[in-house]
Image 1 (tube, helix red, strand yellow):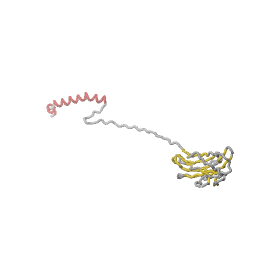
Image 2: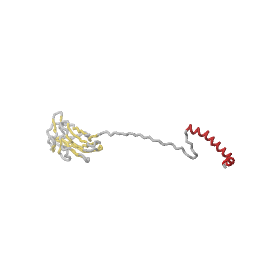
Image 3: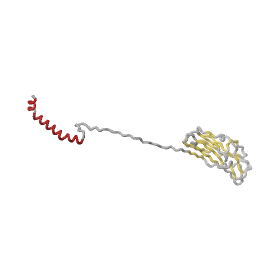
Image 4: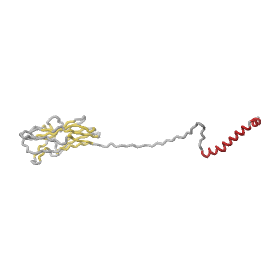
Length: 221
């Protein structure tokens, strides 16, 4: 049976073996030395995927800041005694207090004068500031300030919390007094108003009377 099959199909068998030998002799060494996958028709070579990760550190800074100004910063109380001999109780216009800070504990403003009153250098006469707090009386030497808050959370110091009256707190030269404060941060804006007041006896010497009030804002970090 086998012999008859071989004799009958010997040409096909010889052709098959010949092509097999060619594949072994030609394709075998190429595959061995190059080690490349043999792609069948219509197939795509699948490559292995690799991943690599790392970290990126990002940082930024917010710096502490405090902004403070007053407007106006120059006050003229005018004549405290007129040419008629009449004394006048005079007050400044509203002085805006503008403050901002990013301090979560807020800020405060202290006030101190240079002369403990309005001083005339030519005559050495002093219209003294009130002692502590006092209600000014026209024609009786006196000098001081009062204030009010205009922003929620602002507190006026006990020496100056007499807005809308003639009662004032001292502008002392030897002691800082708390004018106004707030216990939280806020953007720069108007936080309060203050006025400076003065009156003098009609017999006060002629001349220009001056003082320099220093307002110091602090953000206590």
